[in-house]
Amino acid sequence: MAERDRTDALVAELRSVARRLEFPPTPAIAPTVVARIRADAAARRARPPFPGIALWSRRRLIAAIALGLLLLGGAAVAARLAIGAVGVEVVPSLAPPPPAEAPSAFGRPVPIRQVRRAVGFDVVWPAGFGAPDDAFVIRSGSGLGAVAVLAWHDATGQRIPSTPWDVVLIELPGSAEIATKTVLPTSIDTVRVDGERAFWITGPHDLGMRGAFGGEVVRVRGNALIWQGAPGVTYRLESMLTEREAVSLAETMP
Amino acid sequence: MDNTVEGRPLEDAELVRLARRGEVDAFGELVERYREIAFRTAYLIARNAADAEDATQEAFVKAYHALGRFREDAPFRPWVLRIVANEAKNRRRSARRRQALALRVAEAHPSGASAQAPEAVAVRTESARELVAAISRLPERDRLVISYRYLLELSELETAAALGVRPGTVKSRLSRALARLRTLLPAEDPARVVEATDG
Image (cartoon, rainbow over the protein chains, first blue to last red):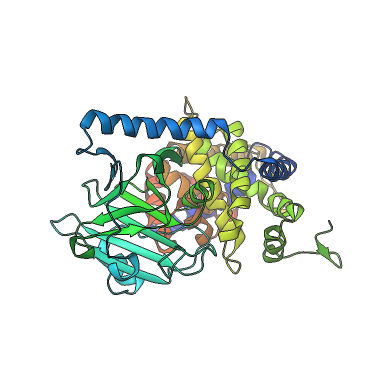
């Protein structure tokens, strides 16, 4: 039998087996899902204007660790944390705002297919998002690979101050540090995306990237979630979303 | 709430629109509509019913909270299957022990004029069971693409969404997976050929 025929026969057999396959019975989950959504909504309405004790404890713990590292290293040496290609420097205070702002700093937008060709890894975005409104390539130099920057004008309805976008997704290859974030100890938290450790950074912080911004840093005004998704790719999602919303969105990424 | 117009079920897009306005029952209707395919998608990854149920439930709750960012003209089913598959992978990562895929194949029922002798039916059933066993021995990458596309009969777009790859990648991955599956099966099994051509 020819190769092609054998494959066709196998496919036909698979389709035939599919009709007789017995999966475990599907549980009736709709009532539970609806009840959980209603309970979540009720809890949100009842929540006081400040986060609960548990949330504060966790945030304080991270801040305390970061501060502890600062004290151990002396104020001149900032504490360092890292996920994939993004390093995070925790400093006691941010320098005066640098002149560069994100929109112009990314350079000239290019078609998405050009981004895909340039970076050499799968450029992806959250399920349900259309193609990005603007896309950029930043060549990091020193053989560390190119970085993809994707941005949407109207994906969440909350514009990031000083930018024309409401979501900016940066995708960085490899594990050598290409981007560095400079943050205050109180603005960084560790969270989980798809069960893996991630950083959640709120409020103004600075972003420096090899090969970008003319070597300068830019002041970022959105909240940023940093995590590693596909093997060897680090993602940085900037938006005005809450932590929970940003993590949910990140988890819809392929 | 009655999610029908003159007895016709509402389109997914309409239910999504209502759910976005806070009509939780409309979202419940979407869950009801896709719970089976979602649960089976999760089961193929999690390999046990309890984890698959948890993953499916959690995924639908997450999908509800993410609806604000769902593009209204996009199809709902692949989007939610993507979230389900992600959630199932998380759970499997944290599961202490891996289980073999325990899918049962029902007896083959001869139909109409082509009714066969009981022995032939038994051979066909055995052949189908061998095939399922071979699928469960494949590496996950191959196992999932074959299972989604042929056992769950997801479209290429849905298979791509559940695997987290571009639709164009599904075809090539599928072709490699089928080639590997064939190496795990007896080369020229007459029962298998009969099964395939008259099934």
